[in-house]
Image (cartoon, rainbow, N blue to C red; front, side, top):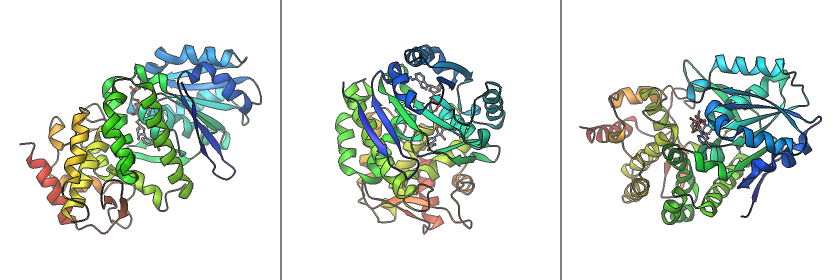
Length: 372
Ligand SMILES: NC(=O)c1ccc[n+]([C@@H]2O[C@H](COP(=O)([O-])OP(=O)(O)OC[C@H]3O[C@@H](n4cnc5c(N)ncnc54)[C@H](O)[C@@H]3O)[C@@H](O)[C@H]2O)c1
């Protein structure tokens, strides 16, 4: 099976994203060139540790690298102050020095937390992302956004800290529960919708094979997504402009995640998928994109067995005004003005803060009406 490499040539902080099956068996070979001494610290979660830590340790031991590891509870609640402090104290206890390397083995939660711990440990040590969820392979492991959630909201504390290497082992995805796989697929679809209509078409044709475990299709989907993310990050590393396109669906998503408590009722990628449908509904209502685009987006997500509508979220939700208020908590709000990513068609997204509140309320009211 072919191995693919996407380069992220940021000046002074260039790194590779290596994509393919069974990479963790060869982790030592990839990581060795980064090491001053043959020793690494691995941060992971307990679920991933149970499934894949031994294999990673063996892959590192093959090149004489010794490993210390800390497995934290799985789940979004781990991306928080207590676990950040536990991780940093543990890294210090393990005498991880400035020239050492931290490995983050897990989904977006471990990647964000581990990356942030590395960013602040001794004012910054290097880290390697070994993303194990689809979401982490196509999105969170690339681009250098790291951080934790605060009581005021998601991702409100963090730093830009680029990894030194990303090893996206696509074989690891086979142990991912179907629901988590599809949540990650929400982010894959997002790339097609925001900037590449041909990729969206490819997903319409290959999505089913991807979900059913076709490894070649999975590698291609990860490679294409990572290349798109890398291109955007290169243009705008710290989100002064274009990088905001990656937030397609996220203004709606963050309000829905806040309303549902950042947990099992709605996974992040599920919220992104619903948010993308709402962003296209809003774009169509504003006369920006063809009327049939929202239905086409919804049809593909439905065919994949994904959530597409507010009606798919169990339990109570706030009313439209309540959801608007939650959007106002988004960290991308500038001078109280909400920012939206809208589209002129599939693959043609743009960022704007010039959206009438009444149009957003109309879209939300219609979407909420379908729940009754
Ligand atoms: N930094 C960024 O640019 C960025 C971008 C998008 C999302 N995120 C963040 O990513 C997080 C979501 O990431 P996620 O969906 O990976 O969540 P996650 O890390 O919680 O992983 C989801 C679940 O899958 C399990 N898991 C992971 N890999 C597995 C495997 N190979 N086999 C079996 N189980 C496995 C985990 O234990 C967890 O229970 C959110 O906190 C979000 O804010 C960050």
